[in-house]
Image 1 (cartoon, one colour):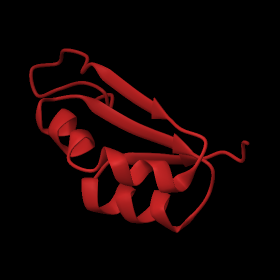
Image 2 (cartoon, helix red, strand yellow):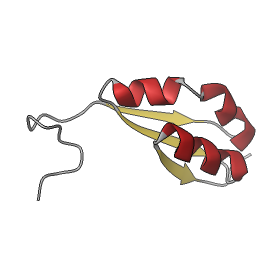
Image 3 (cartoon, helix red, strand yellow):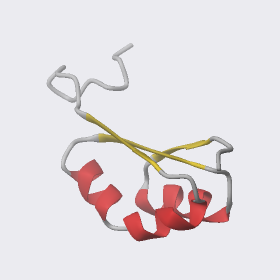
Length: 70
């Protein structure tokens, strides 16, 4: 099985991880995350749990990690 980070030609995709403390802050990243993904990046968003983390993760089609933080 091919590693999920490998692109079609077998090269590793660059990875972008955005970390913010508030799920509301992820709203400001809309459009940017999807653009990075479309450019070939493996994008993950890390934030405190909340509805905006889930919504933006789905609409931008990026990975999310909910990590409680202040």
